[in-house]
Amino acid sequence: MASTTQLPLPAPTSAPGPSRTQAASRRRAFRGRPNIGGALGGWFWLAVIILPVYYVVITSLKDQGGFFTTNPLVPPAEPTLDNYQLVLQNDFVRYFANSLIVTVGSVIPGLLVSFMASYAIVRGNGWFISATNKLFLLGLAIPLHATIIPIYWMITRAHMYDTLLALILPSIAFSIPISVLILANFMRDVPNELFESMRLDGCSDWTMMWRLALPMVRPAVVTVGIYNALHVWNGFLFPLILTQSPATRVLPLSLWTFQGEFSVNIPAVLAAVVLATLPLLVLYVVARRQLLSGLTAGFSK
Amino acid sequence: MALTTSSLRRAARTTRTAKSGGAGPSGWLAAPALVFFLVFAVVPLIGVVVLSFTRWDGLGEIKLDGLSSWATVLTDPVTGNALIVTAKIMFFSFIVQAPISLLLGVFTAGGQKYRAALAVLYFVPLLLSSAAVAIAFKALLDPNFGMGPGLGIPALAQDWLGDSDLVLFVVVFVIAWQFVPFHTLIYQGGVRQIPASFYEAAQIDGAGRVKQFFHITLPQLKYTIITSSTLMVVGSLAYFDLIFVLTAGGPGYSTRLLPLHMYLTGFKANDMGAASALGVILVVIGLGLALLLQRLGGTNRNASQLEGA
Image (cartoon, rainbow over all chains, first blue to last red; front, side, top):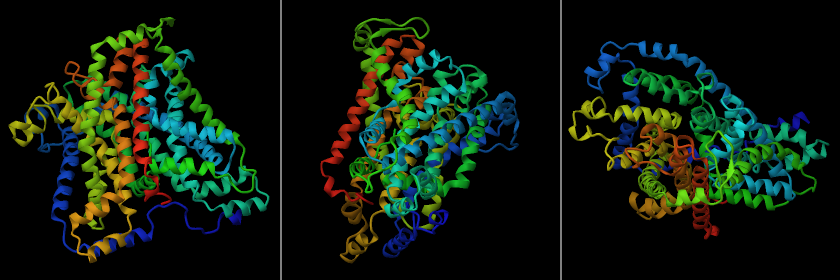
C-alpha cells in the first residue's frame, strides 16, 4: 500500500510546468521588437513600489535630530541602530511571540479541518456534504468582518476577552471557506483510479486521505498555509476589538500603539515597521516560488 | 474574502457529480470545519441581525429595543455620508487598480528576464500589514519631513491627509499601492494560461502588439477580469485597518467609510445596536455585489476559457 502512494506520479497541480516556460520563451521569440512603453511603465511602477520602502528603511536608521534636519530621501551619513534597540526594549519580543503563537495556533488547526472537509467534499456525497460545501461557498461572498460585534459579545461571554485564544478561534473559522475552496480544487485533479486501486487494496477513507490525498495536494496545502499565515500575522481588526493589555498585544497592533507612544519619534516607529515585516520578508525570500506560483494556480483554477 | 468565478463554478459542478463506487467518506470529516464555521461565522451572522433590534453599550445588559437602532442609523446623516464615501472609494479604487493590475499582469507574464526580476519586487507590498503600510505612508506624506521636501517639489509637499478634498484620493492611492500586487498576480496567472499559438497565429497574420492585446489578451482574460473585479469590489468593503490607522476616518467624516463607521459607532460611541444595524447593511451590500458580479460572469458560461483549465 505504501508503494502505491509513493509512485512517482506527476503532480496533479497546475503549478507552472515546462510547458508554460516553453510557451513563454516561444512568445518571446515571436515578439522580437522590444516593448519600450511596457518597459518604461514597468520601471515607473518599480519606483512607486520601492520609494516608500526605501524611505522607511533609511529613516529607521536616522537619529531623531537627523530626521528633522536632513533631506528625507537621503540616507543618513551615520546610520544608527538605536531605534531598533529602543523598539526591542519596548517589549517587541513579546509582541512578536504573541503574533507567532496566534499565527501558528490558527493556521495549523485551520489547515487540518479544511483539508479534512475538502476531502469529504471532493470524495463524498449526500445532502450533508453538499450543504456544507454550499455554506462555505456562501461564506466567501459575505464580508465576515461585519460580524465583529456578535463575535465580541461571544468572546466576552465565554470569558476569553484579552486572551490569545480569542484571536485564534475566529481566525480559524474565517480561514476555512477560502482554504476549502482552494484545497478542494486541487484535490479534484487527483485521478480517481488511484483512489479506486487503494480501495481495492482494502484501504479506508481515513487511510486514503492521509496516504494519498495529502501527499498529492501538499503544494496546495503549503500555499494555503502561507496565504493564511500572511492574513493572520497582519490581522488588525480582531486584536483591536478582542484584546486590550500589552500581554496579549500582537505586532500590527503594537505598531499602532508604538505610534501613539513614540509619537514624534518617527524613526523609531518606522524601525518597528521594519522589524515587524522582517520575518515575512525572510519567508518571502525562502519560499517565494511556492507562494507566488501556488497563489496564481489557486486563484485562476 | 476571496471569490473566484471559475473556481466557484468548478466547486458547484463537481459536487453534483456523484462519485463512482457509492460509499465515499463519511460526512463527519467535514464536521470540525463546519462546527468552527457555524460557531464563529454563522451564529455571529444571525447575531448581528438580532443585535440590531436591541440596545447595548457593550458592557451592560442587552435589551430588546425594536426598531430604534434602525431608526437611529437610517436617519443619521453620517450613515448616508459613510455610504457615499464607501461607494466613492470602491469606484475610484476599481478605476485605478483594474487597469494597472491588468497591464502589470501582462507585463510580468512576459518571458524577459528583467520582468521576472521586477515582479519579485512588485510583490513586496503583499507582505506588509495594513498598519505598517498606513504608518509608512503617514510619514512619507508628511508635508515637512516626507517625500515632498525630499524631492524638492513644492507641489508634493501638500497636507495630503489633512485636506478633506485631497484625502480621499490619497487613500485610494495607498489602497492601490497595497492591493495592486495581489491582482497583478491573478492577471499574471490568467495571461500565462493563454496558449502561445494564439499569438503566433496573430503574428503570422501581421497583427501588431496593440491589436494582439485587444483581440487576444483581453477577450481571453474575461473570466480573470471578473474574478479580480469581484475581489476588488467586495474587498473594498474590508478596507478597515488601513484607513483606521491612516486617517481614522478624518478629517471630519471625509474618509469614514461604512466598516469604520460601524466600528466607531460600536466601540467608540458604545452604541452596539446601531453598529449591528450598520453590520447588517454591510452584509447585504457585500452579498448583493458578489451575486451581481457572479451573474455578470455567469450569463455566458459556455464561453469560459478557463473552464477545466
